[in-house]
Image 1: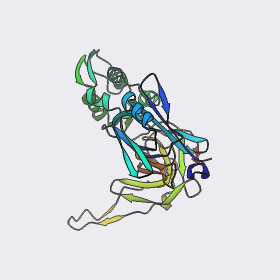
Image 2: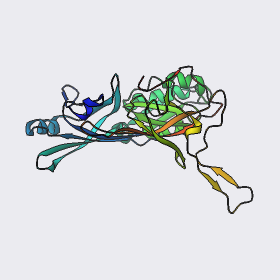
Image 3: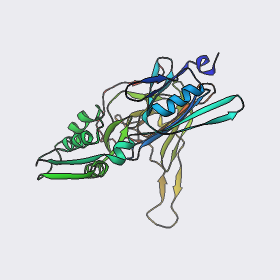
Image 4: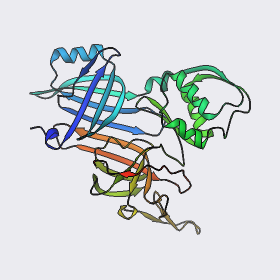
Length: 319
């Protein structure tokens, strides 16, 4: 019995060329994916073991897109989708050959997406964002539209008409900066999230009974957490972590009279609305279907008390 089957883990890997699809799920798969809420493309490195020479050559010559799903039991979800940038093949040892798939998410839209259009006076940030996504040929994350409609839609409409010509990413960045948001492409979908908010959806609760590994730690980058691989944790979603479980770091000020104590990463202060709620900034999935690696590493920041809360209940990730 494989380690994957023994512990209830599963992964599905597909290569596509827009017409045909090949399924590599039954082979040993080793992967590392990285997703961030910044405007540079997410990336993944996937290693598939012991393909036949014919299948390897067919994959290299014919396929350009990759999709990877992973998880436990019924909790299987997509952890990466993107464009293959490079194949690399070789041997780890005499008996094991491999095919490496190096892929990026949304890099074509990021590097080559062009816009050539004009907008009428009064266009809202939501309309601008949707126009740019259409020009880049990427769909808008369906969770973004209602979020923009409640937060920034209509707050800063264009005072006059505007001509847009150039790289889409530059206009995406301009809209994000103007409206205090972060934009990125996640699994092929354009995403825009206000700095003090998050994407709507069910809150994922992490504790020792629901997959949390070790102790969350407050660092200069944010709250760093590790858990069993969980595809429900995505960039912009909400995590619920018991504040008392987080190891904090405090720096003593040395050179400024009014700069005495600084708590790294600012653990969320207790309140009825936001105690223990954190917004995910970075998600890294690491897995091996024939070994013990099957983790998700997260960096998150607490959600400000003034942020609009959603009413979805917290759920255990494996319940």
